[in-house]
Amino acid sequence: MAKTNEMPETALKPPRQKGVWKDFWALMRGVKLPWIWLALVLLFNLFWAQLTLMIPDATADIVAGDLRATTIITFVAAVHPDPGERRAVRCEQHCQL
Image (tube, rainbow, N blue to C red; front, side, top):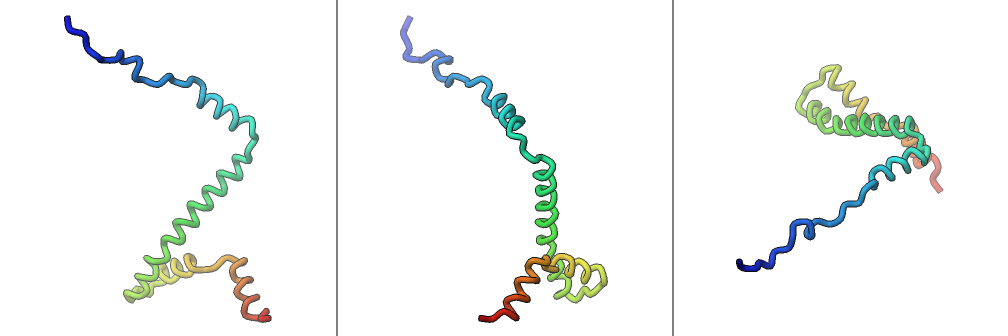
């Protein structure tokens, strides 16, 4: 019988750390994060991303000559600035130093 230089299979595997995820989820429960607010912000950001992705399509439709009411409403809804942005533009126009 010839000897081989093979290592046992158990020596190749790193030792498994038990309880890492259990400790993580226990920490998440213990931190008392505002989960409702986080979920609402996530949903709002998904909605906002979808809305901003509609701008190029609506612009392409208008440039192509599609002037139906639905196209115009989609474009206005997607491009309409938020109130904070409108205030900043107004201040820049009237508050010159």
